[in-house]
Length: 151
Image (cartoon, rainbow, N blue to C red; front, side):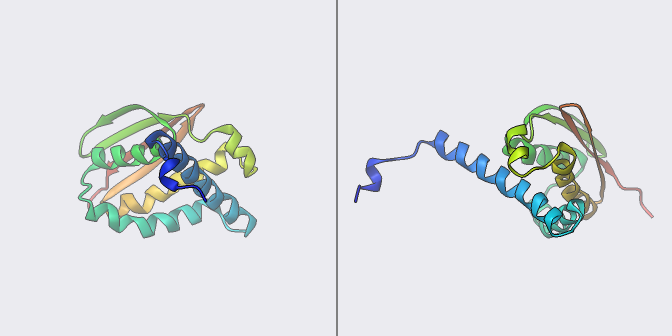
């Protein structure tokens, strides 16, 4: 048996593998929901409800911080940040390059189905006192957070 120290992994190899694995799990969630007769957007919101407490515990406060963190999530899956603008009351981030078309094919998903993962940010935004919206225009995905109106 070979010594594991003799075959080290580079940081780049580990990073690339982690990005690939994260993409597989994210898109598999959507595909699995669909095969089980569940709406992928509802499953994404369920996931967001479970993750929302962590965002407030991390001290993410205000629209700009939320938009930055949401964009970081997409970038960590291989997307590219194009812009981040706004302030504590209203902010948006635009990203491109996610997901790769080849990976969509592995799970027989459309771009629209994959995009439903963005719905996870709805309950996260609510937890932070923000309204979340997203839209796709071609290759560009825009994530927007706005301070919720007080009752």
